[in-house]
Length: 327
Image (tube, rainbow, N blue to C red):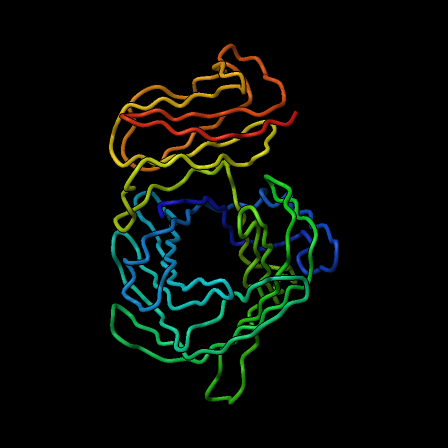
């Protein structure tokens, strides 16, 4: 709980990189996706006990600052087990408040079926109940179809990942026509280190321009995380997280949470116990914090490849973790 990931998202009016191709041992080069204008958002894991819906053990809050001081927020309520990830419901609202909307699924909607392997596929259909400002508004029947149509490597603007590629078709039943509508098409690249490394949603051809369009999103370890709003958790104890990426070259990010404002020291040591670098020494506020180490010592000299330790020391505590620098 309290863990945050930072993503970049943009509405792309001309997708020039190859989204559709897939297969075995494929390579997707999306390294130039950062040329698209957009914005950052954070995913934050909240305490599932905050969910008013039943059978929820995973609650994730998506939050983006649309313009200074105005946040668009979405909470996704899920049930995670060893065999599936079920979508129980989700809600959207803003801060400052405006109209809020929520959706509840009956039965639970199958988002992922485990294990996920190349060419595995599944589908799910559910009745969806929509509420506006807490008042029931309409009911629809929705269906998703998913197939893992590729595996290999993806190069995002920041990192190379081993991945599986998931193609998703989302449809809604039309009572007036008695048929499923044309499905929305999405593509997800799933990595074992960061869950979703890259995605393209609402992918289609713009009839006016002939361009491929859609929303893109990718994990950005350098992005500025948005401070959690009113529904975020205050951390219950100090937690020092594993650095990312790891192994790394030339830099890595170290994150930790503080349950109260206090003086802390974050330092880097070599395996001989010799101090290499002091990243921070001072007072920090309650919440999440992160620092970047560029592989240099206190003198500004690049250190050699090897195993290093990073230690967080605070009031009546200290925690240490290992990391690997590869030149």
